[in-house]
Length: 366
Image (spheres, one colour):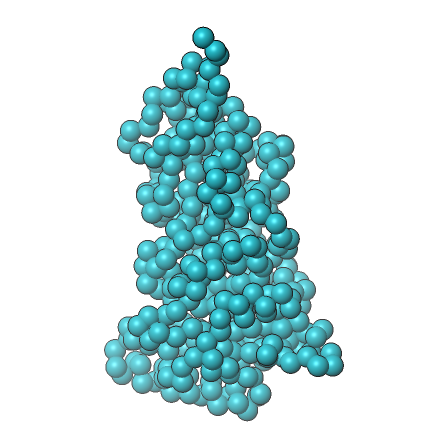
C-alpha cells in the first residue's frame, strides 16, 4: 500500500459538536474563545490537514469572513501551524479571494512572517465594545499594492462619518496619525452631524472647513433630504431644514455637489488619482441589518475595492482585523452603497491637496 498523502479537509464549524480529530489537538482555551460568540453570520468553517493514517488531523484552523467580501480570516491555527496556514492559503486561492487575514490571538510574528503574512499596524482605537486581538496579519493573494492607513475604531455608535474623514486625511499625510483621537472625532462629528447621522452634504462642508486646502466634492444623486425615514414626522422636519442649510453652505463656500450617481468605475478612478472616497453604505450585506454607515475607500485590487470600516460587530466575532484593509468585490459594494428605501448613493471625495493648483486639474475629479 502506498503511504497516505496528507490532504486538506474543509468542514462546517459547529460549536456544540467539535470534531473528535480537532479535540485531540488539545487546545481547550482556544475552543473556549471560538465558542464565546455566535460566529454563524460569518460562515465559520474548519480547514484541517489529515495525518498519515487519513483519520486523525495534524493541524486545523477556524476560518471566518464577513459576507459579500473577498477575504478569509484565520481566527486561530492549531497543531502543525504552518501546515494549517498553508491549507488555508490553498483554500483561499481555490475560492479566488483577494486576501487572507490572521488574528493574533495565538499567532506568533515569526509564524506569520514564515507563512508570507505581513503584520498590520496596531489599531489606534478599537470600536466601542469590540475587543479584538492586539496583533493581526495580512497576506494578499492577488496583484496590486495597497498602502495601509491607520486603523481607528469609532468610539461611539454615530461617529463613523467623522472617523472615515480623519483616517482619510491621515492616510493622505494631511493629518498626523497621533492627531486621531476622541476629541478630534467628536469635534468633526459635531461640525458635520445632522443629529445623529452625518449626511453627505453636511459632511462635505465640514471637511472643507477643517481642511480648506483639500479639494472636496459631494456626490449625491437626489435633491431630497436623506437618512430621515426612521424618524417621526416632526423630527424629520427640522433635520430636513438643517440639510437644506448645508446645501446653502456648500453653495456659498463653493463645495461642489455632483447630482450624478457616483459609479464604481468613478470610485476606482478617484482612488487611482490618489483621492479618498468616503462612501455611505448599508450594513445589511456585511452585518445583516439595514443601518447606513460611512466607510473609507482607499485602495483597489483586481475585482475589489479596499475599504476601512471604523466599526466591528463584536457579537459575531468581528474585530478590527476584519474591518481593516477589507476587500469588497465591486458588485457587492455597488449593491451595498445604494441606500434604501430612498434609492440614492452618497459619497464625498477628498482630493490630493498637492493637485489643487496643477494646470488642468479639476478638484471635482471630472
